[in-house]
Amino acid sequence: MDQLPPVTKADLMDHFDDAITTPDLKLADLENHLRALTESGGDPGLPWQGQWWAAATAGTTGRSSTFVWNRTEWATVLASYARANDWAGISAGLTRPLKMALVSSRVPTHQSAVVGASLRSGLVPTLRLDVTAPMDETVAALNRFQPRILVGYASALKPLAAEQRAGRLHISPQGVMSASEVLRSHTASKLEAAWGSKPFDVYAATETAGIASPCTYRNRHIYDDLLIVEPVDQAGNPVSAGTTGAKLLVTVLFSRTLPLIRYEMSDTLRLGGRGCPCGRSFTLLQDIEGRVEDGQGTLRTILTCQ
Figure 1 (tube, helix red, strand yellow):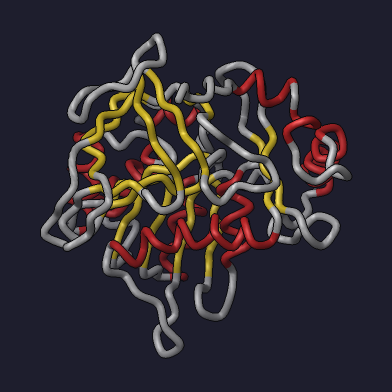
Figure 2: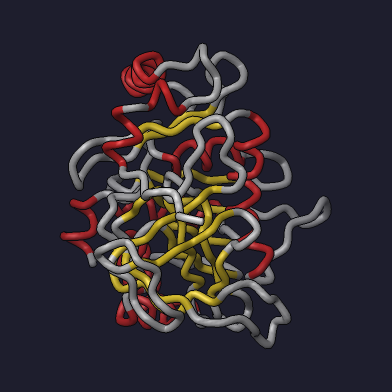
């Protein structure tokens, strides 16, 4: 049987109102909602019309894209990010809340901001910090909060590691998680030097939510139960395990409101086999050699800080 052709970002946005499975949802209305949310500084964690969560990519590679989830889908999005904590061995419970500091965008259209706002609870007290805020303000806030887990863009965590080594920042997180940007080895080594353990490199995107995260052995496992990941060559042909694809096709298994089937992303990655000392049988992610999509980060921060 022939495979379905890939769907590009342009294809999806050009035919958004046809692809959406809820007839009363229109792209123009969602874009107006996100625009109003930004202009008013509203709370992105609150569902629009009481039932929808929406986010958009920044469009640094060209056209911005808008995505929407219903209540069940959004619960799965949040669970995919919570899984990263669980696989890293950082648990939360009624007697030990998971104090999380998130250093990312506060722009309410970014999925990282929507996720951060949605996670706030007694079980997961969350400190949301603006990646563009002055460093002294961020350091002071972290020192007061004392997070158990520190999450942020690689380009945001790197200067915080320098502040820790300089003695101005003094936190002892149980885990440090880098997300949304490629974590380079030299940045990872600086984070390890600052906090005494290797960071956890979480792979996620606005379109898919969590894609892969490391176990306690720092082996990254693809979330095979939530999506299908297909590295392909430039012509769209599947590449074998251990070969870096020219681009990536993803099928999001839980996305029903806006189906994403063989959706094309510009990320270049290499998959491995299965099997890990942790006992998980999920496909191993060997390497990410490039993140061309804008994801949730900010290009300016990447260029100036990493």
